[in-house]
Image (cartoon, rainbow, N blue to C red; front, side, top):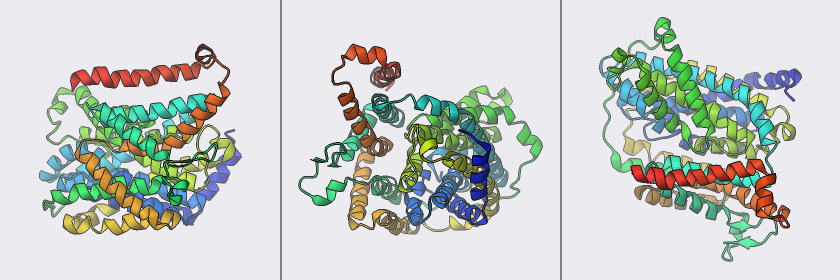
Length: 496
């Protein structure tokens, strides 16, 4: 399956000047977007996916991989310079980096973040390449029953991990997403469901406008009332850190990379979970003299956080490509872009789309190198960018939201849907409901629905005990799903 000729053929496509240029544009847009306060990686992916509609399959994938890689790092720029994380996963970097910036070491803090991001991406890519064959083999053992249970576990664990001490709110968000995914014609019998006589709903509700509304418009509504003029340092100083200092953080980088990749492979966990967890582990494992600097300006802490949230990129691609379950909301946008280009993700990705996995590997490697050079080049221009008042900056995003929603199917209904989703998302956020489980459920809902009903037809004459004994992977998944709910209800409930 993994033939050298295929790798060479995909490399020849990926290294074409036009492909590299498109990836460079994606990386640049991603860094700038991630650097703007209040804008998340998910928001960047959700809105910029509209630009890939008219692109060919390989060009669109290269562009979106560039946006993904660039935007994950971009959040560190505003976090260090103006103490406002551009993305949620940049909060640990903000805690340490801005403290260093106030001491005149903002350039070195950003340089350390760049190198941490570069190393994290490499660790994530290497682990992705190493483990994807094994996971693909395992994924081929999954049938309809197992895919239904896997989808339900993805929604359940996303609700648990994104809602903190109130997992029930995460699950409610997921169930709302499931209901939304059921709108339209039934995939097996073609019967209209929840359309209420409205013809346009028979095509179902597209998750791209929903994604843009929930993570784009909702973000704007959240940020606008919180305006406070940020103080921008006039000089960032030296940027590239000494190599000797970076070599000293090798053990921290490897540990954080593994943590970030594993967290990325868990559906719904996300880069923010990876960066906070790695930051906490790093603090516990740091030497006593270094631990005293934690929270007051520690370069090792920046390495811990940045390596983890960038390794998360490779980790999130594992379940996205092999199982068709996005590792996080940003990976869901990658999944949407792949599906728009007729790429069948899941256990059969290598047979349905020969060579596409190798192209994604190579695209991630190219994006990582471009991110390193563009990050260094864009730091000083970004300082000027932050002089824009947030009350001016955020409303400028609304037309981008509208264009992104409209571009998917050139339908005004999708624009209205985006606005409704944005307002609903803001209301849910105010009441403490996480939005990621809803988006994940909208994407996984059709997969869960169709596979459950197909499994019921297959098991029509079978007993429950036969299913338990003859389908061991499904039985293991049932135990995992039940444990996820048990952990959320009883263990987390006691600590709330």
